[in-house]
Image (cartoon, rainbow, N blue to C red; front, side, top):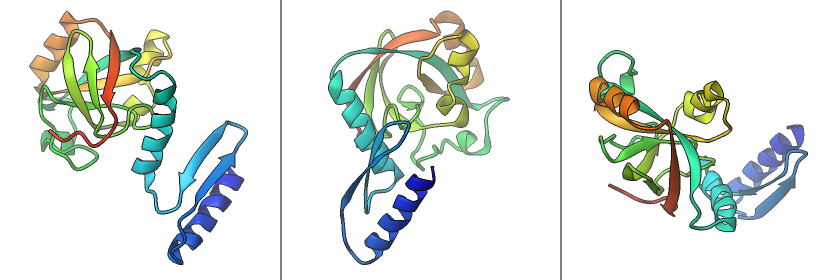
Length: 174
């Protein structure tokens, strides 16, 4: 961790003087690429692109959960239809995912559900709470609904697991 923080400090210094470089840090956990001038979103997109390019076009299993704007159990910003990225949440279009797994703006296809755009995330999504409760290692994709009734109806009548294919990484706007 110390090495990563030290390297990020130097990248910040180099960024201030206008130098753009690519730094590869080899940590005990693995290799991450950080480019000066790159924010978290871009860095997570680069990391996800590398991971997804190995199995490009392949589907992977996720745990499906739901969240909603109207009704008990939603937070302030979700009730206002605003995602963590500041984009408008739209029922039938928006989903939340871990941006390290599927970057923001990615167009995905969920088998049996359809195409959706990753516009949001949340701590339970990133921590894979729903998957851990079920004893599986899958990433979580949280489907957005306008109201609680529709979300719970979907959850009751559909499988908690689905195959997801990333059709386009990042920059999908709907």
